Length: 351
Image (cartoon, rainbow, N blue to C red; front, side, top):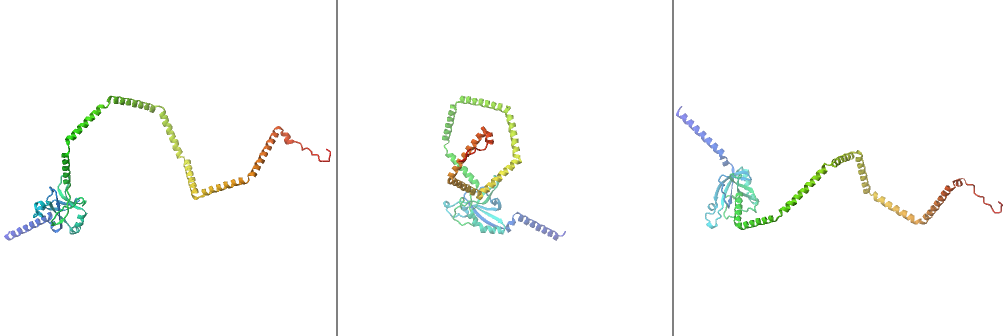
């Protein structure tokens, strides 16, 4: 193999190695060089321990980018300010890496999102997981922006205290309140309460309560025995049989088609009566009955004398019928077969 061929192979090998290295670098992170980015910064007034450069940036758990810088405000913005007037915030800068349309919408809506309550806070990925920078929409009145007097180099997003810091603050506040408690006075009060309870318990008539409890148990046992005697007696099975027979008869009565027909007829009559009452015929009938009663009353008042005569004649007729009945009882033949009436002599003739 000639010297020229060896150099040619060496050049191809070097070129392939460089191409492979570029491809690996592109796969590991070089693609971000060709994507649109959006950088913002936020300020914290408490510790951000656990948050590091390269930590994820997430919006309600959705990954958006990573933290690119963590530095104090005294070296970034307050280098020339007096020490007593420095804010001493922690400046955290993050970069969002997304497509061009997404980044353009974020640039356009960033101000409105901050006004709506967009806040950044450090959060834990689980109980013991890595700390990351979380974005979320919170109450802007509860979490106002921190005051500062410099011009941010990037878009400013206000921060909110982390949940871990809030828990630590609450624990410290609780411990501080415990230090303020008068434990000796509390111990004295507890001892006094226990002594009072012991005295009250000693005053309880245990023997009397025990005797009353025994009497109650005896009465309860007697009552249970009476109940057992009643339940095991012959009357209960007979009562249950009668109840079963009555239930069967009631089921048969309810299953009788005649009862259903009667109920249907009653329902039909009720519907007709309701319709009759709703149509106004009932009111008209009642008014007619009232008019007829008024007319009869007027007729009786106008013919009271004739009615009295008719009643008197009826009384005489009844008396005659009674006399005839008595004669029939005494002399039925004379009443039925009596002779002709006596001749009445006329004046001027001899009998």
